[in-house]
Length: 144
Image (tube, rainbow, N blue to C red):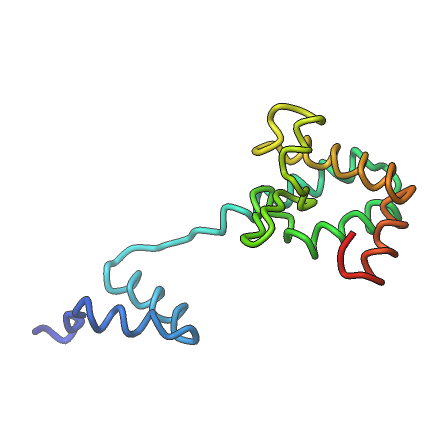
């Protein structure tokens, strides 16, 4: 083995390294270096959540109401439009239950954050009066 060569890494050794949560990032970096590749991938949700937030800001308009809406969505789904509650079946940014209720805002409710935002805003305004009133209820009950 030349001084510039790295020792071979077995698959088992690699898996042990990345299976430990604290070592996962280091293991991924090691794998990238070992393979001679650069891996630069952000979570797919990151781009979606940013555009969903921008869409919500435009749709809501009022900064205070957007902040309240955003707090609910952050708690409910982390701004993930495909978030699904395994026990209840609640779905989407605003965790509609049943999820199919969002079809009233558009047939693309499963995949379109704007449709989910529209449905969520309508729900909050009709049931609570506003996103901020829905947030007040959420804070007192941990659901809305």
